[in-house]
Structure formats: structure tokens, C-alpha cells
Image 1 (cartoon, rainbow, N blue to C red):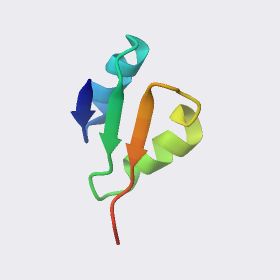
Image 2 (cartoon, helix red, strand yellow):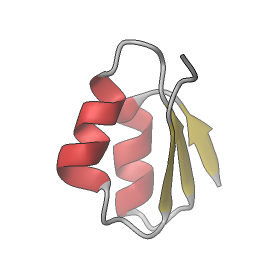
Image 3 (cartoon, one colour):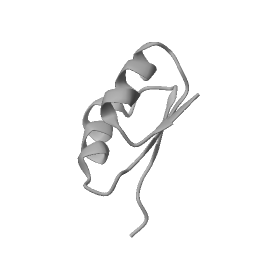
Image 4 (tube, rainbow, N blue to C red):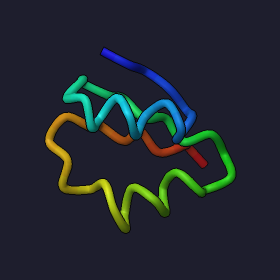
Length: 51
């Protein structure tokens, strides 16, 4: 399992089939990538930042 807020860590881990928890870092880039490209990945959990 990989827990990260870095896209360059999350992407290879997802591709390799690892369970990934991607935590929004606060500048909304990760949420945008998740919504546009990664939403359908069954081994990825996205955790948005709380307001």
C-alpha cells in the first residue's frame, strides 16, 4: 500500500497494481488529475482536503 500526496509517486504505484491512497496536498492539482484521469482506477482512493 502507498499513501502519498505526490502525483509522481501515485501514478507508477497505481500502474503497478498497488493499493494507493492519494491525499490532496492543498493546491487542487491532484483533484483535477483524479477527476479527469484516475477516477475509474479500482486500486486508488482519493482523499480530498477538508475546507
